Image (tube, rainbow, N blue to C red):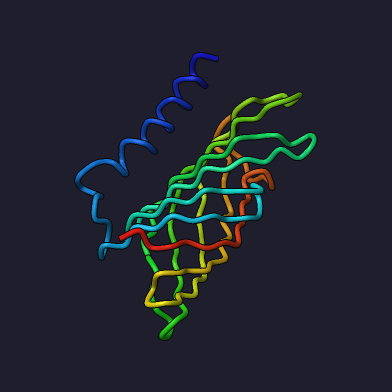
Amino acid sequence: MNKRITIVIFVLLFSIIIPQSNVFARGWRGDTRLGLGFGMPNTVLIFRTGPYDIKVGYDFTSGSEYFFLNGSYMAVNSRPLNHIFSASLGLGLFCKIFFGDQEDRFMGGVNVPVSAEIFFIDNFLQFFATVAPGLELYPKPMFTTKAMSWWLGFTIMLD
């Protein structure tokens, strides 16, 4: 149990400290965004600063209640396909903290977010669709549907 608490505290501190540091204050190309995504998990708050994405979400459907945290580095960050369409590809870490009658209270692993994006109003508004297949590493390494995530949503530029 102490190991799980330590991992959760580390992930939460990492997600708070990194965006506040001077290194990422302006982001990549001055692009800092805030938005919402809907999918699986149900609702996700998204904070993007350059190539870094932080997603915090939840799912309170019966029998599958959990809190979700994901941090990703988008190696291909909003690569233009034409004047409004772009694509992103990255590598991320995720964790799910389960509530209710779940056997395991914590699950973590890696995922590969792939995103298609459309920009409007001089890149101020962005609509996106993201699929993030994942590999569960804790409690034991395996591919499961629990590690799969997807979102449809939007972000707005804060700069």
